[in-house]
Image 1: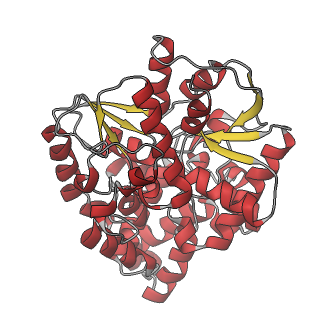
Image 2: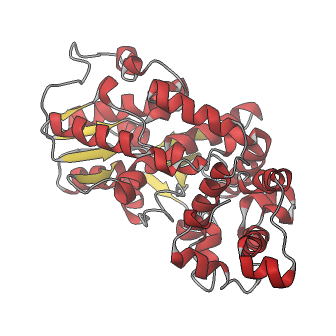
Length: 394
């Protein structure tokens, strides 16, 4: 492992932890497994020991030995069984930036050759196919062909004011492809001048970041920025919170960027998207990367409340305290069972509201929750907010 993977702030913050254990109390992985070794407080304690063992001073005077590669690999099993939901960071009374620290720790483990081998698959897939699923990137916009009235141009125009950046999950998973289909229909109804990037859209880089491969982002960022420039667009819209957060935090700010909830709220508020009445009681699940990650809590609720007849009931944990769905941090690839157990806690809370449907604003959340309800024969509609707006189109 190498100290260079951490900034000075992170090194100081490691030592600030008082072992209050509040992060363990709110961790979805700990709640699902009752395993304290998945908690932030355990992870920080082990990390401090490792960092001290690297110091010549500690080795010379305190007999600290650096961990073996086998010990690091065992540690990595706890580090990667985390959804990176950020709830530990939200609750930390000292304001330790724990999510950033976990990302640096994963990069450290990659450099130390102590990481799950699924990380190699993520790196190879993105490098070779430009998407995390190793699908043919030329087929990134093939979902358009499954629309009821697919236009001849397939929504890929030479020039447009707005680029809709689809994201890997929505582009390739049949369950999630309904979301870009719905959004294309909504944007057309609002007469938005938009385009897709098609095969010129590459993975935003978020799966690499979460895997500990931060140093592999530059080519993806440079390519995607240039692809948007070629369209002459001034706005990029994302239905995927992870793509949105990546562009906010790691991409140069050359365009206006909007999550789709923000963009839809603007269209509805300006009268550009007339909506009909829907008789439906719903609850809203805050995606981790949109809520805690990007601090957007109100736009999706404003969109839901703007639809006549729709009643919004809140879960007991909402906004910055929302429970993770289990689909983040590449956890589904690393430990699918744990991901499913976290989803169970989420769905149980949804059912307690008595709502007919759970609305979210993330393709991965839709996938995770809908997969759980389908496998367990639970009668609950799981929808992205774009699909809800599509249902309300006049």
